[in-house]
Length: 107
Image 1 (cartoon, one colour):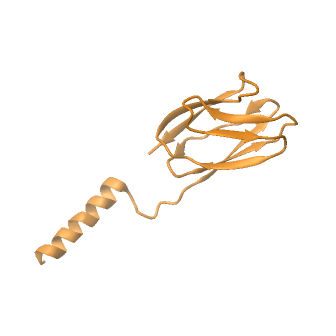
Image 2 (cartoon, rainbow, N blue to C red):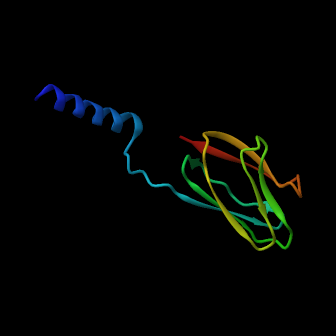
Image 3 (tube, rainbow, N blue to C red):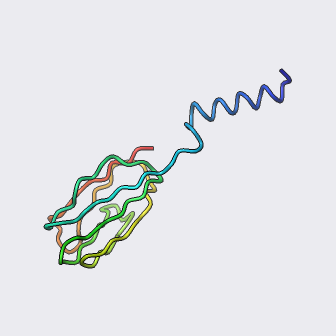
């Protein structure tokens, strides 16, 4: 095998092993706010999309304690965001601080 072709094969293999398949698809996650509570939050990955649904009659927010996101949700509305960072991100509602949750974001 010529050296150039061998080098390309090694790089392609390394990219697959280290980075995983290049065609990984982002997942969609719905987080429902109902009865003054955030619904279940499943583990996430960078690039996934979260759609926040406010099913309450009150205005809510999904606000990260580290200020990485702040989603304002009027009653009966929904808004989406893309997950951008790895790690645990605690969030709360600015209007009802007792409403809390944590995003667990994997690479």
